[in-house]
Image 1 (cartoon, rainbow, N blue to C red):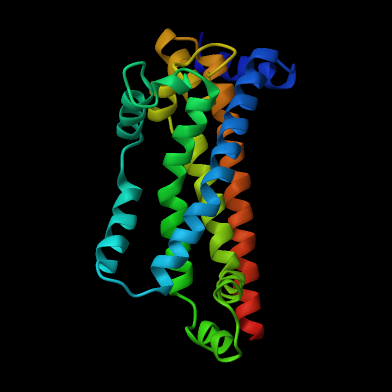
Image 2: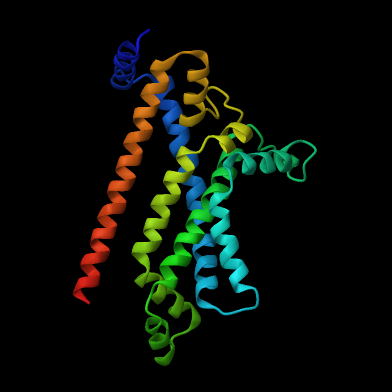
Length: 235
């Protein structure tokens, strides 16, 4: 099959509503969204805490947050595999080779992106926002919500970037999920499998879906950045 024929077949699969293909897309989106939703609150809170408080070892914490962005997802997958295997400390959960295991992997993969972006967004704010809130007698919770509201565009950018990171990774999903058809096969693991088999049509179709998701996510990020610049210009 030539590249042109494979591409034609790929579009045919997309527009015919191929059940197997769209189930793979659904598993990818489902596990990525749930993992990201679980990771967002602790990552945002931790990013805010590191940015707003001075404590011994703060520079090391910032350095570690930045370094975590460079962690290979296959290494994260290996560590999770060891934790979730039958002899591992989390073996009784029976999450290995399940969607729950993939969600756990997406949680760990997404955390560094959310943490680093939130940290950068809060650090970039004018410190007078927090100082004014404290001077007006605001509680710690109120100060935090005020600061995060002002940094909302950066936090939303963190969530969008985090989604792009988790849905496009392959190493962790493959090692923890096992690439089981109908259960844990995601877009990226399916592309890898189909390419290794020499069956390019489904791989190209899933690649088109992945590129489309990336374009939508980056378009949303550009809109947020445009809104942020517009809002900044009005202040």
